[in-house]
Image 1 (spheres, rainbow, N blue to C red):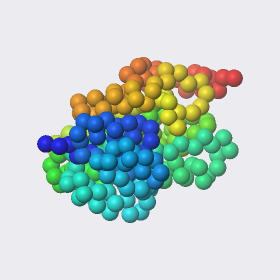
Image 2: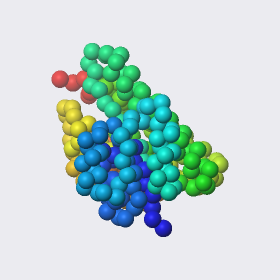
Image 3: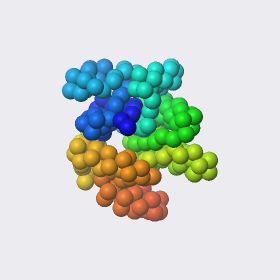
Image 4: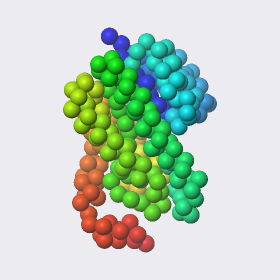
Length: 241
């Protein structure tokens, strides 16, 4: 049976690469994203991919998702790749609010839509792309790091609930480190992976229906080290000149 996949935020970066991998694997793919020009380029490359221009923070995202699921003829996997980051040294509320609107409110709304749909059909897979940023705070992008922590815990909460309800919904979290994408900015970056390599690992993790996958795998070590660092040492490291 042909796999049906919807990717939110699939016009660039890891989401786009996943869309091309699924399309090349003969899946039925739909992509919702904000940037129309990039969507058109994706459609020209893979004519079979369904596209819709929309922001997942929009109030009517529920009807947009419902319509494209209908056009797909159902849904097996929903991947949330959409995200926003603002480096905000001046702590401008506009930037913090934009981050929260997309990474927290929009993310949660889409998960709620997917959860309700998959529960009604008795099966499905939700995939959320969080970040290594989920583990600790950051002085330059506080809302982004906090939003990724929210995503990490929310996905875990849904996974716990799925086990409690025994509802056959798989919840997969992809935790990327640094990648060569538009969002991959900042100093002191290391272990930077190509988006192609990251997508191949992500694709395999999704297909294997893993609970959590670090992209690339070596970022598991960074996650564990940062998680257990006492605050005084973490603060000293991130604030060093």
